[in-house]
Length: 203
Image (cartoon, rainbow, N blue to C red; front, side):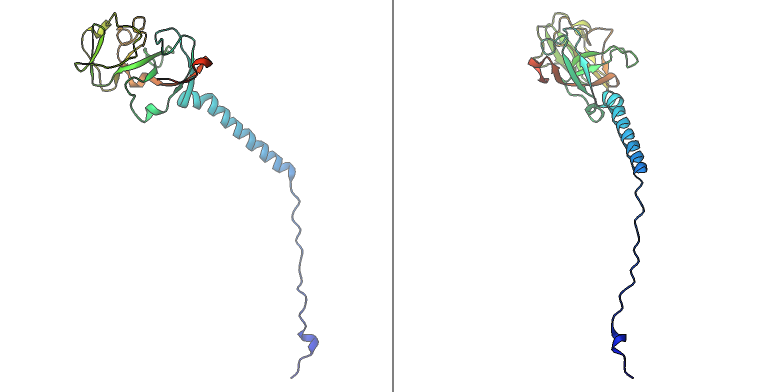
């Protein structure tokens, strides 16, 4: 049986062209607009609520109780994250609420005594567990030890704070301020914004 040569020729495939559906530009534009609105809403919420309440906030020094380290009217940044994961360190400058977080009034002071320690001020010297604390932050010798004239033993979550301008500072030596609970510490002062002549990190 022989095959015709014509039958051996390959036939061209039958290709059916499928056209793409037309793009719905109006629908795409609406989706893009909704995405943009949601993105900026989340961004604004983060800037207005999350950042100042849980991450970092700006504060202004009121008074001279921390002079010469901090001066009246200076703008500072306070970070609020690190103390959620670790305890404050001695000599940190903190923002705290002396009358509890329900009261808007806050102070800026330096941590001197740590939890569990016994603090006493004799003359112009600060004693921690019976030993003189070596520090250089005080602007002047201490004139009034306040309640620290007698030994004060701090609780497990309590801190003893003082202003660097010791003779005008209302701090843990005052019975109305007293020891500072960790729950009332708002954050750590880390940066000075203004004046520009003193711009930078803070010791």
